[in-house]
Image (cartoon, rainbow, N blue to C red; front, side, top):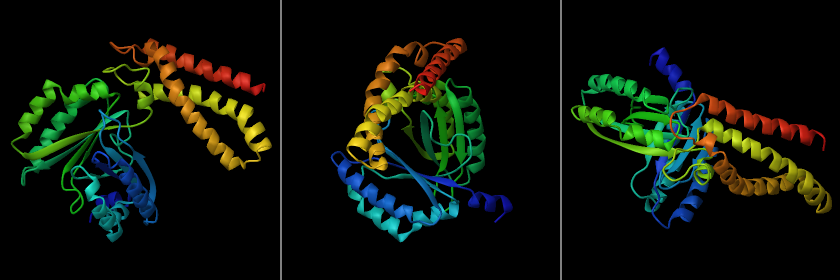
Length: 323
């Protein structure tokens, strides 16, 4: 093993699993997922896990991200008897096979992003050099596509991941789909038939998009960039949490009802999320001029909207500092 490969093996990695569940099996899969989450928590080298449920129609799959301190730790989990037994139990719940990929951390193009595509390609034996040359061409082409945010290219990991893996990141479903359907990409894919056996792509959506898709973005319209979504959520979350804490949590739940702080805080979080699920779409619709303006991007509009958000932050801080 070279020094470079040894360093890569010791670097943190994310194990990404995409799976599709049979209709009517969602509850059973949730119970199974809780068991596998408990099992991986005890695995040496395990750091954290994120589970993203489906968001049809754009994302019909469950996406599970499990982060490990090293590639060897992730591979050990993949090959463990405990995981193999749990995966065997879940086969009746699945519609098709899982996609399982190892993605090194700290590189451009890794998940999460507002809109991502995971593309796995099986290359014909002996055609690896031709595939690499082609991959450089398509990487250059997609970097010029509107909304492009990043790209990650990962060669096979022998015994674990036999396909070549590419992860594309775009700022919205609309721009990602625009590139996926573009004539330029279709022409490049046609050229790759000489040295590839098969490929398939899956779309992944992350973040607060469901809230904004229900308000600020109409059907078929782009979902706002992640930084705009985050600014709106903070502008609403801070006053909701503060006001609920001052008006309900402290005087009633803690002082009058005698609930411990940790339980009162949990209730506050539940109420905050429920309120935001209503407030964010309502506010997003009224900020459509900034969140999803359509047409060419205008930096002056972006700055104006960000200024409005910063003004809301400042007003909340000023008012609440007097309470």
